[in-house]
Length: 97
Image (cartoon, rainbow, N blue to C red; front, top):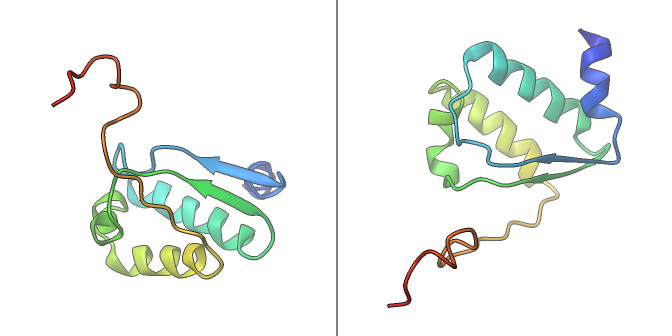
């Protein structure tokens, strides 16, 4: 297991795209917490999500404590960018209002 975790803790930058698109079961949430904890103050991360922080317990098997622990580590040195507006992927499909 430690060898597998190193794959995610070793890179200078780890990108997690679309966090929250699918729910994460208890085992997956615990593993993600380990990765985030091991990377905390060691390596950069970029995380994208279309879910507000208040909705993150739903991502992590309705575990509010785990959500708080993850956000505590992620937000300590973070720059949070909120992007609102029309989806870039849908820009050519949606008619302007």
